Image 1 (tube, helix red, strand yellow):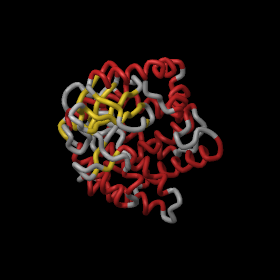
Image 2 (cartoon, helix red, strand yellow):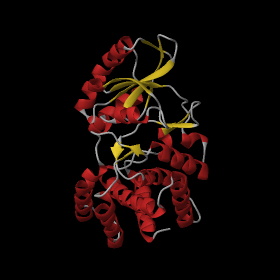
Image 3 (cartoon, rainbow, N blue to C red):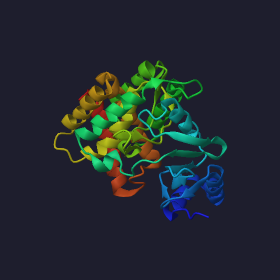
Image 4 (cartoon, rainbow, N blue to C red):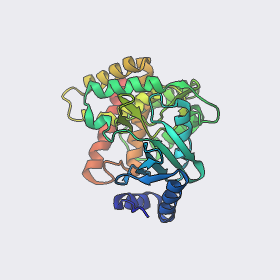
Length: 310
């Protein structure tokens, strides 16, 4: 029976409570059953992400792969559907799937992420090019981002009303306008949904391949907002933050072949959402204390900056 990383156990229980504890108790059996069913043997140290474990394996024919088992959450349901739609184009290949157990057998690629290997324009260019490759006609049955627009608007208004915050009215109004004008009318295009440099891995078949998609259907420029939100922390000490943010928008829009203004507006909306989220839940980087205050203030500043249109 494979031992699960202690850090993964701890963070799962902290996040999911008793449901997480029960799932962790069942997880070794799920892993062992998947290994037997798909004829695999362990071939390396067990790794983990935020919501799942990754077991390097070898198949009967000697091919290297990874077994991924995720916590059963709605946000993880359509990951294998996205992999099927892409068929290895810009993303890792899906070999096998077991949807009731949230288990997948996936192509094994390198462990180095885009965030670890590249920096500056190279990160944004690689992510933009990958976003363009992943933007394909969506198959039926996947969640449409436009269906979340009403929820986004209600949450923005509730957060602005109930949370102590420093988000200017102009900034909030711009985010609400994006929800109304872009959020409710989106193309039927498959997008990654969580495209950031840690979800892009070095590979041999292609230079970079995506992992951990949400499998959303909507505006490809939405992924630009996700990228900027995660990449923005690397700009924290910039002498010219407006210029640095504007450069990210320029490079991503050009690389992804997208309208820069749409990328800016989605980025602004996600920055406002992040500013409120931090006040409610904290961030992975900081849950409490002075660092949380600093990151939250930075999210406020980024949201206001994107409102002005760098």
